[in-house]
Amino acid sequence: EAGSSIDKVVKVKVFLADMAYFAEMNEEYAQWFTHKPARSCVAVRTLPLNVDVEMEAIALP
Image (cartoon, rainbow, N blue to C red; front, side):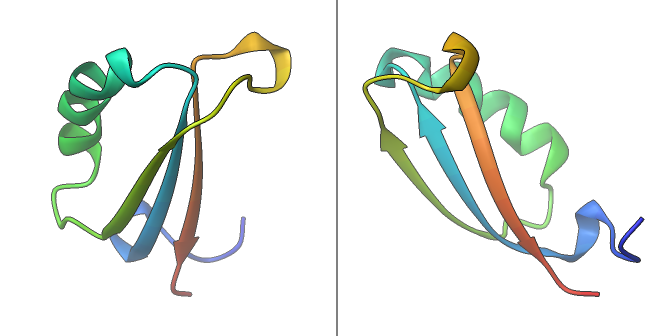
C-alpha cells in the first residue's frame, strides 16, 4: 500500500490496442474516475499479454 487512493489520481494515460474500444473504455472510466483527472489516450499496436487496455496513473499521497 502506497498510502493513496483512486480519489487522489491526478493523471491517467490510457493505452488502447484498438481505438474502437474508446467509447466502452470511456464509459467504464467515468464510473471509476468521477473527479475527472487529466487524461491522455493513445492507440498502440500491441500490449503485453495481448490485453486490450492498459492504464498508467499518477496519484498524490
